[in-house]
Amino acid sequence: MLEDIDTPALLLDREKLERNCLRMRERLRSHNVALRPHVKTAKSVEVTQTALDAATGAITVSTLREAEHFFGRGFRDILYAVGMVPAKVARVAELTRRGANISTIVDSVEGARALMQACDKAGVRIPTLVEIDSDGHRAGIAPGDKALLEVAEVLGDSLRGVMTHAGDSYNCATTDAIRAVAAREREAVVSSAAALRARGHPSPVVSVGSTPTATFAESFAGVTEVRTGVYMFHDLVMAGLGVCELDDIAISVLASVIGHQREKNWLITDAGWMALSRDRGTASQKVDQGYGLVCGVEGRPLEDLIVVESNQEHGIVARRDGGAIDFDRYPIGKLLRVLPNHACATAAQHSRYRVIDAGRVTQTWDRFAGW
Ligand SMILES: Cc1ncc(COP(=O)(O)O)c(C=O)c1O
Image (cartoon, rainbow, N blue to C red; front, side, top):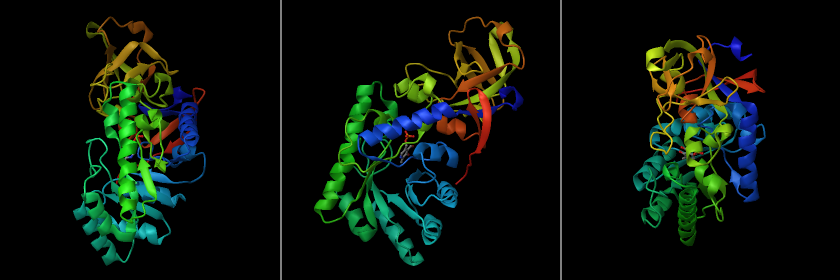
C-alpha cells in the first residue's frame, strides 16, 4: 500500500514504463534501426531490461560507474557517450580486459591524440566514435569540418564510426521543428560517415539519439542505432514538447501534506528539492509547471496545483492561478504525487524505485548514483 511507505518516495508505474518502452521499440523496429537505450535516466538494471525486453543488450552510458555496474550484471556492449579523457583509460581498459565491448567518443584531434597515447601506454585498443555536432547544442565536430578526417587519421583502426545527440530538440516550440532537428541530426551523421568512408575509413556505426527526435524523425536511413533514455519514464518537459501525454509519465514523487498556509493559499509538503530536484525545465515552455505538477495519490492532476517553490525538504504547493485552495480536501498527512519536470534529475535524487502495479507497491528496484 502507498500509505505504508515513508514519504517522500520515488514511484515508478510499471504499466506506463512498459508502454513507453514498447512504443519506442516498435517504432524503431518499424524503421529497421537498432535501439541502444541510454541508461543514464534510470540507472537501473530492471528498468533497462524492460526497455530491451531482454536480460541484457547493447546500452549507452553517461558514466563509467554505469558501465561497471551494468557490466557486472551481464551487459557487454556498452557505448560511453561522454567525451573521453586519458585519465579514464585505465577503467575502460579494465572492462575491456574482462570481456566488455566498450566504445568511447572524442570530438577533437587533441582529444583523439591524448586517447591514443594513453591507450598505447596501457596496451589496449578502445573502439572510438567521433562525436558530430548536429545542432550547435553542445559538443562535437561540425559536419563538413576537415577536423573529422584528421581525427579519423589519428584514431586509425580504433575508429568505429560517428555519433551525435540533437540536444536542441528539447528547445523546439512545435513538433514540426522537432522533425526538422531530427532531419538535421540524421543528415549530420550520415554525411559524416560518408565522408569517412570516401577516404577509406570504415565507419560501421552511425548513431543518433534524443527522445524528441527519435519520436518524430521521418527517416532513419543510413543510421545504425538510436540512443534514447528519458522516453522510458517521460516527464513534464517531454509532455510540454508534445512528445508524450501527461498520462505517459511513469515516475512521480509521493509526498505528504505537512502543513496549511491558509492566508497564502499554500499547501506545504515534505517533497522539497531534495526529492524533486531543482530542475525548472518547463520554465521556458508554454506551460510552466513550477517544480512539478501535483496529482492525487491515484496519479491524476488535481485542480491545477503545482509546486510553486521548493526548499530543501519542503514543497510549496499552490494553484497555478493563485486561487483559493479547498483545504478540507488536503488534510495533514494526505498523500499527493508530483510529476517531475525532468525525469533524469528527479530520479537522481533517489536510491530506489517503488514499483507500482495497479496502484500498489509490488517491488523495490535499486538505482545507483555517482561516477
Ligand atoms: C550523448 C547522448 N545520447 C543520447 C541521449 C538521450 O537523450 P534522451 O534522454 O532525450 O533520450 C543523451 C541525453 O542527454 C545524450 O547526452
